[in-house]
Length: 170
Image 1 (cartoon, helix red, strand yellow):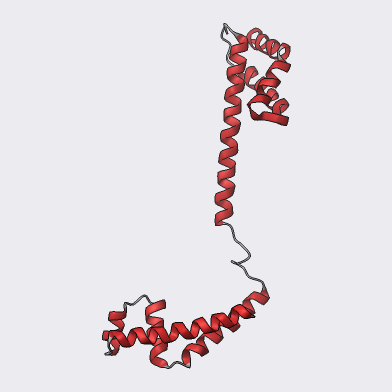
Image 2 (image 1 turned 60 degrees about the vertical axis):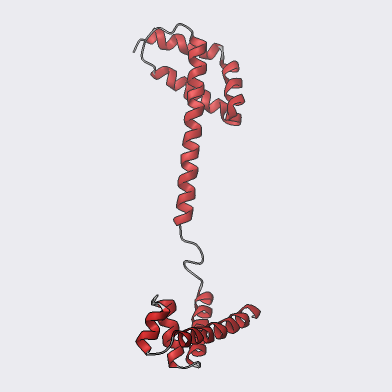
């Protein structure tokens, strides 16, 4: 690395520091303009020795590239944080002890409500809603009409809707 060249650009950067700081601030650096100027200084120091015909143009172009790099970095960081947040665990993933007890209690109430409707209604509901079996396949398996399967499902849905209304009122 040619120390004269690096020193020459650094001297120009120092002499035009106020102008470069205004340039950085105007491009969105705000309070970070001073930090970005220091980064600009470091980039200039790492520049391979070669003649620069217009040092100010070179410094402004370098500053503009620096701003662009910072923006890209911020966007990437925000995207990573957003993706991490979306995959992160929430309070609902690990409910508190009270929530667990309430959920278990409600699940028990749902089971009792369905059982009161009869074993066939429970079986039809579970096959359809939990196992994903089609209504036609359930009708064939139980030897009943499709209309009977629909009526059993309606009974289960009505009972669960009433139970949900009770939960919501609590």
